[in-house]
Image (cartoon, rainbow, N blue to C red; front, side, top):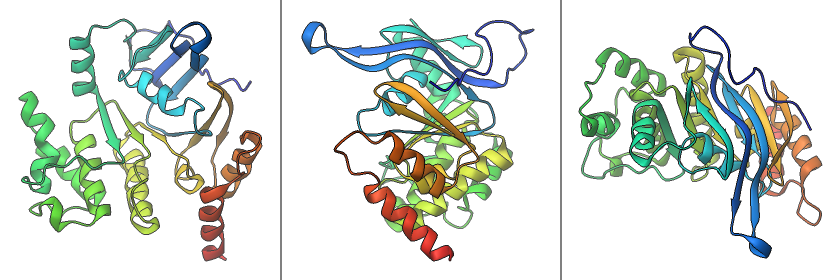
Length: 278
């Protein structure tokens, strides 16, 4: 198994570490006895601060479960989870809610925009609900980064799918979270709109110093990341730095379960990208 732990759990002088989130010997199981299903099997991983990490694997490999546990959306059966310098294992619901609100951003396939609000209002809504003051200078940088300057007064029904997802990205970034988690954020978009959103995610890392973690099936999407983690049967079985769509697809074939098509839509997507580049 590939070693993915960059540093020990403890130590240091209390300053901000190079690790934005970490898991140690994390097990997540559902059911008991003969019906017990292990979704995560003693996972150790560090998520680098200020970097873009993609998590991949076959269906049922545990990739979404890992993201949910790291983000405090789900509890672990055993093991430990840390966000920044805070261990979140065992936190009560109220403290977890505060953690997710104040320190974590989320981007999902569904845009989850309120149709009666314009783009600017949707972006600042979580901060408005929490009673937090909007940092207008930072919000301006975020809006510029995701390319929404001319669309802030538009309501969701006046925006394309790609533009709506950019609003969702800006909403996730606007509160300056320590880490943003994306669960198939381009899954409902066509290839062009998806590429635009991925470019904005990449820019948020490069220009805003954001930490990004994205679960995806798509090797083209994963190629925007700095690092790709591969899960199979609830374990991290490999990782890749400086990925390309072709190298990611080749690695995915290696871990495809017996009897499962090796590539499928991902293979066609990567092939199309390679063809358009030639």
